[in-house]
Length: 94
Image (cartoon, rainbow, N blue to C red; front, top):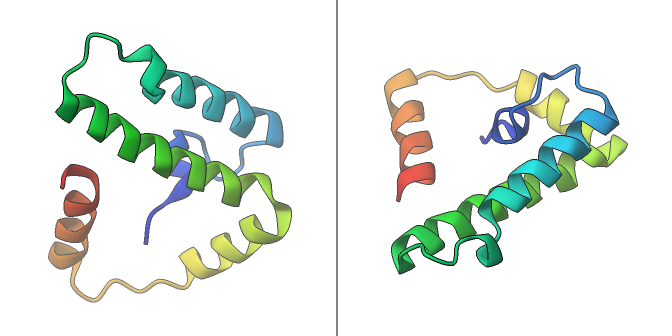
């Protein structure tokens, strides 16, 4: 499960304005129009990251979705930490 707070780089106690600022900062950083001299691979990776940022913002900016996410995230039990870290690694770098 992806931690949306980590994606945006904010704390779980972040207020709505902090979430919005983080989203704007990251969406500007990964936006295709900002990557003029980047390679195709870099643009592809940035597009994936931009998608993660947008998904995180969509969840955290909606009070009902945020509450449900926090509840679900707190109920996650990791039985195999190595497999969980491999899955996270693959999500970000594949």
